[in-house]
Image (tube, rainbow, N blue to C red; front, side):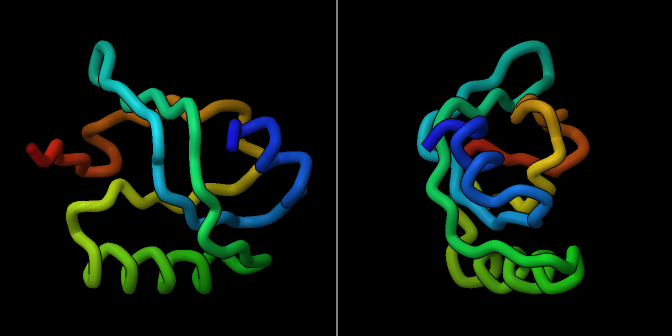
Length: 85
């Protein structure tokens, strides 16, 4: 699902999602396609779900963001992204 579709389906929500199609460029993680796992009105609930998923499946590329965010270009340093091979 593209980010624009997520924004339409879950307006003004916090979404927890897995990056399906993504690449790194100039210190940013650019995400083209996602699978939405859950959505929340409260950021703390979304963060708890993110932490649980990250703990249970550390090799998956999981994020949580608010759908008001204009795009999915995320600074790698900010999210502590680590590429697994």
